[in-house]
Length: 289
Image (cartoon, rainbow, N blue to C red; front, side):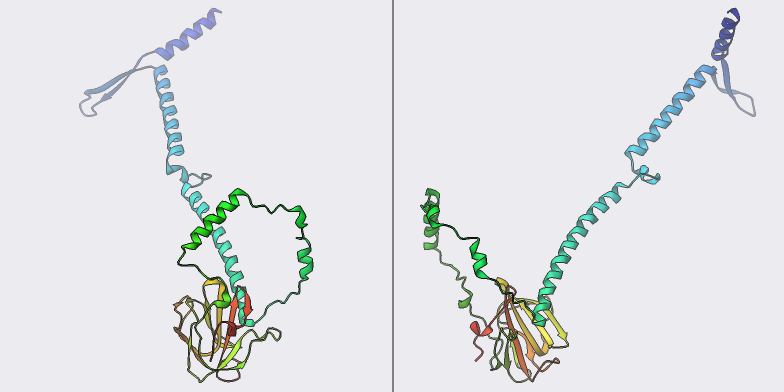
């Protein structure tokens, strides 16, 4: 027991034993700086210094961009860019799908293909048949008030629009003789207008050029998109005056009559008019004489 106590005292003495650290001038041996040290305070000071250094390193890594240089840490900038690219990619994919559908519709217009599905109208109406006796047709107070408000607004409306497309008047693309009329059953969704070569072909209404290229079957083709879902198609042109994306006005020259394409039969204009993806007879809207 006494031996253990003596050993402890010896260890304590060594830890607390004072030493002097002296810095001397090498040439004159003049004492510059001196420190009184012990093993204990050197150990404590060194430990605190190491702990502080480790803490400072952790703070630098956690709260500064230096962590991006350590393998395994992801860059905040790269995360932000990856997120933005993900959103942009999703938007581009959606836009690409819409564009592909739109181009398919244009392709159908160029090829003259359209599905003629026969539908049994009676079978469609059967599910909507209701017993009139079971319906209360008495107008409610809110409905009467709304009708009176709308009637009052329409009474003083100076700019009422006629939505009947039968009354729509379009500018004739050119004047000439119809060599072939519109025939839905024979899939001829156009009128062929005979005119001399280089006769100007004009836009039937304000619109945007959505197609203006050469095709093997129908030569130079230009397609305009108008308000209300109308598409006007001009085929077998001799030349085109507008490029894709151009904005045109009604009566503006967009092409000239020609005899181009493998399916042509002479100088003429093959003119089609489409209403929301459905071909219509151009004669119902345009006077070609």
